Amino acid sequence: MLTVLEAIKLSTEYLEKKGIDSPRTNAELLLAGVLECKRLDLYLSYDRPLDETEKLNYRTYISKRGNFEPLQYILGSSEFYGLKIIVDPSVLIPRPETEILIETIINNYKSGENISILDIGTGSGNIPVALAKNISGCRLTSIDISGEALKTAVLNAELHEIKDRINFLNMDVFSNEIYNIGNYDILVSNPPYVEKEEMKNLQKEIVNYEPFNAVTDGADGYSFYSRICEVASELLNLNGKLFFEIGIGQAAKVEEIMKSYNFTDIKIIKDYQNIDRVIYGERI
Ligand code: GLN
Image (cartoon, rainbow, N blue to C red; front, top):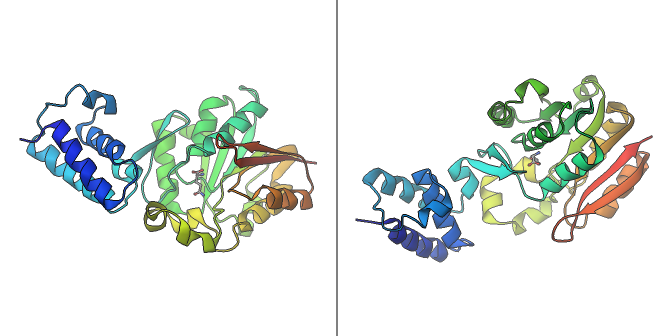
């Protein structure tokens, strides 16, 4: 008979040996996933025995995690801006830093304002879902080059009952089709900004499991910023604003790119680790 506490202890040791960070937390979150309860509820049921199916499922989860599969893909969901977001390997797992992007946009607009927003590279749809939930009255268009990712984004819009406010388009921002999708008050993007050379230094979880083209542009990390600035001068309404998430050390270069496309009033916002994380500016 294997109890909750014993299962957690054994799995923690296993994950630790495999080199997984925070092994105990991972073991607990995965068991909570198997038992469909909250992590805290485990502490009240340490002596509860696991039945055969639960043991089998837990073993599968732990072995996946031991192979560096991200916790969120195993559990099938993540949390972003207080919202549950369904994830699968076709989409980037939403990162806490991206919440700064949402916060910055929300701070710039009043709820109820009738604004139109275009999200470029929507992935799981975390950005449009969080914006739709927090800026009543906004209308959104989300594009992504991946049809698979868009399917997941649609699931998230349905889960949060805002599908009628988001128009999903399967499109490459580098194609000229982008010029035919209307005009917007806000452009937002958390583009693939990791430099190709940097990929080998990232965690196994990212390199082996997250979609390559959601993480890196396969070049110097700036190609999406340049392209989005280029199309923004056509797609943005007068006085419209462009909001980007940026990677460590990219602020100065992205600011330079934005200035070269005539953006003004450029501001940079830091994340909780004091890293420049969001940059935005206005189209004149
Ligand atoms: N918009 C999604 C996010 O912010 C996906 C971004 C991406 O795939 N680069 O998480």
